[in-house]
Figure 1 (cartoon, protein in one colour):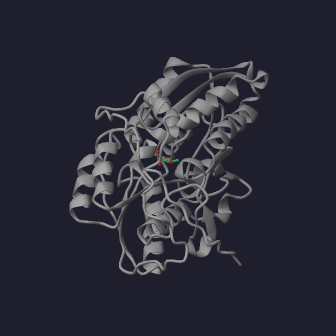
Figure 2 (figure 1 turned 60 degrees about the vertical axis):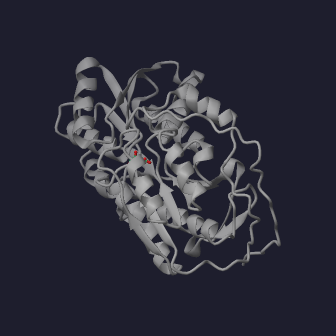
Figure 3 (figure 1 turned 90 degrees about the horizontal axis):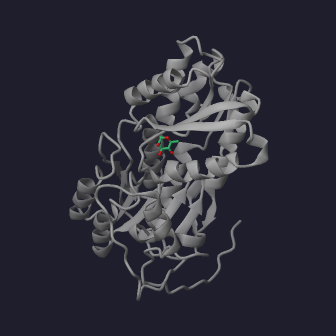
Length: 359
Ligand code: RAM
């Protein structure tokens, strides 16, 4: 049972300095500057935790790209949640994950007067001007999976602690390569907020004495495109014939890398870990290409983001720290610092448990 706190909060809006957004993409220092100038786009209205969820809410899911099985599962969870609370969910989005590919979709959703936009940002800044216009028109914005700069959204639903994800992927690979040798990262796009944050934690983890005999030789980008990720894997093995292992923190990248490795003489020799879905990677665990990898439940991520959007659109929360809302079967969540809500801990999959999961 949950205790409801009669809680009121007036979020501060005045005096926010809104930072400039660049359409062409974002550098790491832009992200750092914005994080330190952090101010989420909380609305000025007071939250009423006892407000009922409004009926007929229109919630639009805007993934990094639509042809990515991970987002199909996540948005399926989000649309299911919308049905549960008497709303209408839909998915729209670009077919590529480039920095500004989502802008025209945001503009259309604003014109359509959606109640909420739930977005996995391809770039922390490129989407911000369009999202600000959406918010100015009364639309609630939730980022999930990959955050925008804080002033581009009311709430960020994070899949797991970024620090934990970054460090554990290094730990998984280190165990597999015996803490020795050259390693590479096969990432998504160069602008992706989530992958870039995780990679910073991976680099930090690698500074520890435990990893003194491991060397990160390259960060390659497969752009969350299957073919490009496949070719980049091939390129890594050609450039570094003595490569010991690859971390691919993207479901698209790890699946393409696994496909390449499983058909090559490096199968089982060049170790591969990262983030993937059990259904895509099961056969590579069984054939010895992959020992262990991790992920959260994507459907739960979409489901939670959908309830966060409904809580915002119904006035239960404004996005301020300490506010609470209920997310159906997942229970109650509290909004943390910088408008962040955390789904939970990821699962590590290996030969012993992979058949217990179906997503
Ligand atoms: C890809 C996307 C997504 C990421 C997962 C792990 O599908 O890049 O943003 O969270 O991988």
